Image (cartoon, rainbow, N blue to C red; front, side, top):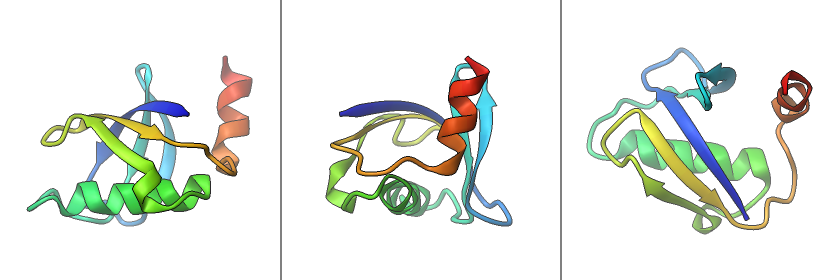
Length: 89
């Protein structure tokens, strides 16, 4: 299981992992923060990035804010940015 603290920027030009925002992973997504669309879109993005089903990505905290915490059950792959992140530490 992986727990991620994320800072999300909605209404971006494209979906991407940008880098760090303080101690959080910053992710830009195209979806607007209206009626849960951004959360659903972010779940789909994370599921694809880590090679899991959408049901394996659970929003733990931050439903209405930009700072969120997600649990990813049994990630099968790691996004390319992950290798760069580990070099930064």
